[in-house]
Length: 448
Ligand code: NDP
Image (tube, rainbow, N blue to C red; front, side, top):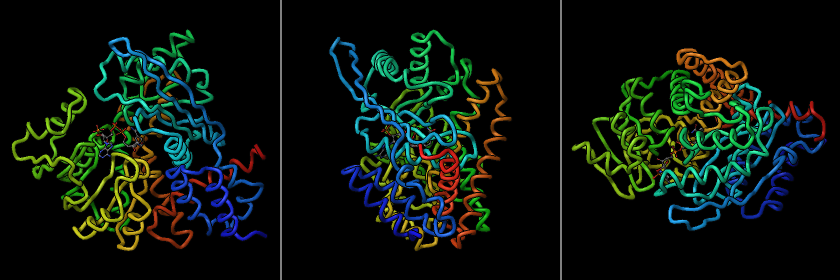
């Protein structure tokens, strides 16, 4: 019998050899694999038939040209990606990201993470991710629309309600999903609502989808604090980012009586000790599509710190909701020194492995993104169910389902961590529970 630790080492070595330079993908894969030893010691069959190697290789990777013309008629060429990582549990599902730094390594890491996140929801969805190295910042509506149309013209041949169902992510919100869906409908001549999620409410979207990720992170955090005999009420928090996830996390924290004293964007940090004003933030970011300097201008007591580090702002709760590897070991030490008791990841893999190690050593409660931010994809799956039934549920219905899904994910992670003698270790709990569900399905489906 091959020892679990040897099987894991062999796979890590093969991944390093086969994916040179793909640092984010290797980081994400390493984080999952290194937590699996206790499970594979008990269930060695989950590592047989090359399962680990198969699990770490995407089922399909699509890279394509996206040509488009700007408002002056100049031609630009971007690169589009879709990584369909794993469909053992259901059709591929995962967002699209428009970000000038996007490359295959980032899309692969996101698709890999998505596979386990989707498994944790308990719903029948596989994992994928995609996007383009397109920068929507500073582009007119017409330019972004033409880009979306060109992107979808190529991507659509890979999509389908039973095949692959994208949603939004960084740089892709309801507006972009509308233009993508419009082009899909135009070319296929089919009103196939279930082919994209994150749609507008009057054309097939689900109430509650827009806020689901941010809300879900806070629901998870609340449950985790309760589990540790604590609570969120009356505490202070910082939330990085000011996009979809951050905005709705801030709003939900406010409902719990938490004061959010800082948020950020890629230019800097705004510190508002009176508590971030969500209505103003929403207007600045979603309506005016402006920067946080405009927020600070509307709040005389708020301070804008260009290039500042949000993790230096003292708080009891920290929610990284911007991007990957935004919270380093040094940042984690600053948070712990300033009295932070809990961290919940709204973004995907925002904490570096060093940072996770600091939180573990300090006994800081830590909710990893693949569990804590699963609310968005869970409600996307509910949107698919409504589309399939040609039904529309109420906001109250969806919120109730979201709350029970987040509770179930929390409890499964906590229970699994305890089962493997790691009480309170949500990283181990999430990785083992997510992996086990995918691996058992893969075993049942044969060597494919
Ligand atoms: P948005 O595009 O709506 O917002 C991203 C926010 O992060 C913006 O405020 C952006 O600022 C900021 N940001 C980006 N890079 C940096 C940086 N280096 N430092 C500080 N701020 C930065 O994206 P989402 O809110 O949708 O996504 C945020 C994260 O959550 C991503 O990791 C995404 O994968 C994850 N996620 C999203 C889900 C969803 O449903 N949308 C579901 C699950 C996870 P600026 O405007 O200046 O670029």
